[in-house]
Length: 110
Length: 110
DNA sequence: GTAGACGGTCGACAATGTAGACCGGAGATG
DNA sequence: CATCTCCGGTCTACATTGTCGACCGTCTAC
Image (cartoon, rainbow over all chains, first blue to last red; front, side, top):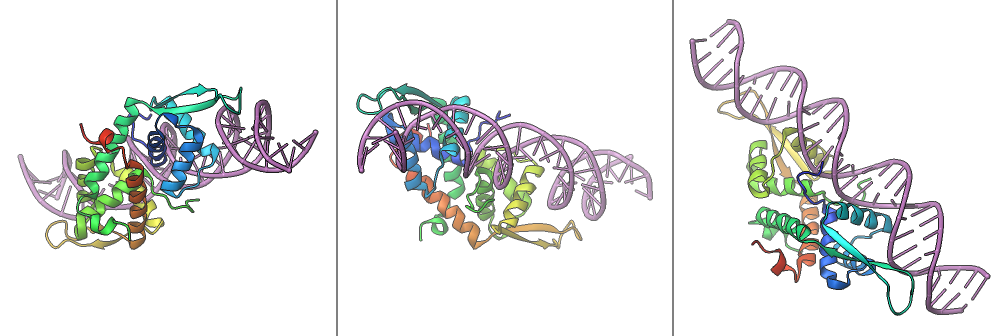
């Protein structure tokens, strides 16, 4: 069971990409964010599967929004990270910052 | 296939913990490092399984070392992260640093 | 209309995360 | 010495994550 709640590597990136998008975090934004920052191609399958699992864990919520212009009648999911999600993100970040301590020289970009 | 080479969440932490230990990265060091920095209990099974997989991917190597004092005759594995391993670590780090950009306020420790 | 894009859903399978049972050697103790 | 216990390590098995590709429907551009 995911009793511990640790975020997987990809889950973490998805959550962060959503936050980067702010209120308008729709699929396009998020996927673009991931591809640009993580150099990572994201297929729809991988993307939505992960989102659904994050939703089940209460780390993200979403609401359907019907765009006024274009695509009328076709709802889109707009995502948002829950406070619990942010909390997990914070924990992961703290752990990594600690583990990186002292290794910056080796780990900085070339 | 792990053709992409992304590091899993735990794999990453293990690699970092080894680097933190320097030359003397033995099981005890590494596990202690993980438990302290990541608030995470690490069972032997989880630990060694991960190490073996990292070895298969050429991200770590190890040599047996026979301690002079105590436990004579009982070799211990001493781990070291390979350049390729360091490289992967660097990539993950770069990605996270980018994705965290602008969110520090929300993600800093409470 | 009709071919792309694009948002989204599903089902399946590979890789990673995690536990627990086991084995053997070393040090302590009676 | 008998044996108890701690510890590094190995192995098997199973839960959770990561990743794809096939499908569907709705637009937009030809």
